[in-house]
Length: 479
Image 1: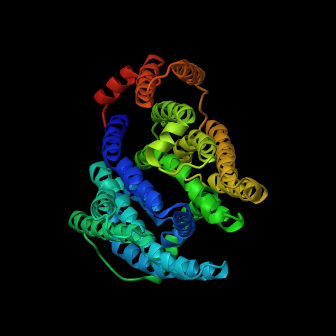
Image 2: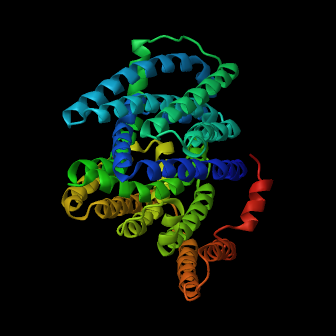
Image 3: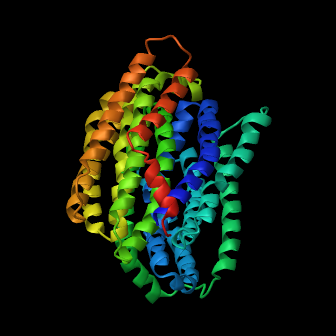
């Protein structure tokens, strides 16, 4: 299992490094540069609004499916047709809920138009993720890796044409949204064909008894995803609705959040690989600690270097991607990027508890996260704007990750790895000293950044956060 994890992690990282940064910064960031803070702020708020209720499209079926396909692969053929039929019903429910709440809280005109198209896009993306759950559950990580980026590749070509080739066209947010729609449809069609050949489709019809049984099993997953989505996505919606200059402040927050989200996407690769592997190990009653230790060291070393580098190089990084930088942009980004540390921890320890079925704990801690997030936003947004949402994000994820780590030790009877903790502390201190030293010289940003990245990699190897010996053992280990 460790060998499979390491190999497929490297595969996923390599593929995503080639595609997603270009989609995020070459397309998404350029869209904001072209249409401005206010228009993009409206889109970003509406996107997060539709994302919060995204669980209604799935009700936890996808995560539930990954676990069950991994543990009971023969059942995958029997249920896929019924699950697809069920998802069509959920789409109707999702659309009605989104539009009803949207009208209630004051969305109208152009906002409703954008909302309708985002609803369609969320359904298409959710269905792609559902198909990917079969590839992931069957440990077909190459296919999963392909479909994790294919829609982004299509988006780059379509939207890139309007941004960089056909420059005479007056670019609007609808060009971006429709490009996403086309990319999702093409990706969904190819995934459907491949899955049909691998497992086929049976009983494509709605069966109430089956649907009720699935709801009962998937409901804990659904509740967890809903609660987690609320505390991670409510910030932008509240900022746009509550601040006097909400559209502008949300656009400013989106600048910083886009970079954080880009890094989080790579931590989610750990989630994608760890969830089915942890599920299989727990089902077979195998020791989870070696894989937990390896993944934790890798991810914490990565997140520490990212946070330290982004704080010190914040101004250069923002100017690298955006033409319009406001006075508070740098501070907002410096604060928000700190959240990457606790988010990384949540990706590992939260995934472990999800795989073990310990959803009651995760739901409770997520509910606490919502209370913290909403309370801090209500108190701070009116006065501090985007900076307040950044502070809230850091505090909320910090509390949740700390509780998860402490509880994981108790629940799985794990020993505290003081050696790794000490190595991480030394690693962080040395990186800070390195950057402080580098800033004494008037060198170009690119040179400083490359020096920082290379030194971070060397230090992580020397401190055995990336352990060469372990890697060799993984390669020789049995799958």
